[in-house]
Amino acid sequence: MSSTALDLLKTRRSVKVGMLSDPGPNPTQLDEILACAARVPDHKALAPWRFIVFEGEARRRFGEVMARVAGEEEKEPLSDVRLDTERGRFVRAPVVVAVVSRVTPNPGAPEWEQVLSCGAAAQNLCLAANALGFGTNWVTGWAAYSDGIKRALSLAENERVAGFVYIGTPKERQADRDRPQLTAIVSRWQG
Image (tube, rainbow, N blue to C red; front, side):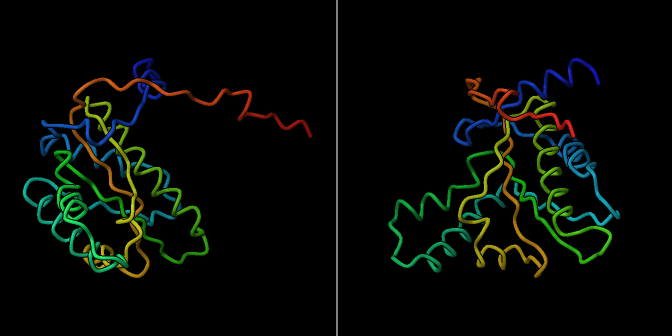
């Protein structure tokens, strides 16, 4: 692995969604990002993930869906501010990718392995976008757990949203945050 790749891994940082702007990846770059996302450990070659891309006007249209679903699922009526927040949620970045986890019953690939493979796909998606100079943020939020959003995305019974990855150009460099010390998270088994 090159020092450039190691530097990318050592300095990777999520960018706050509000700090992402145009330009986003062009179609060729986005295809490259998605191809890298799909190149993860995948026991039994089940492809236990898929991607739904939101770009252009589709981001605004899905925001209308989010506002409607939030209004249907919340116990109390939503304020105009909250509805506007939902409408504008996906327009905060040039591209948003829903990473969908799908589990296929297979005795050779337990559910846990398939879910982990989806997480690796989401991480590869972020890293590939970062390698091309874009900022990313992997977000779940209420929509990832919403039955109404699941229906709006036409997810199957064996599918769920693992997260929404926002991709764009960072408006400014994000300060790093404290990372765990290896002594706190690494042990060596001695037998």
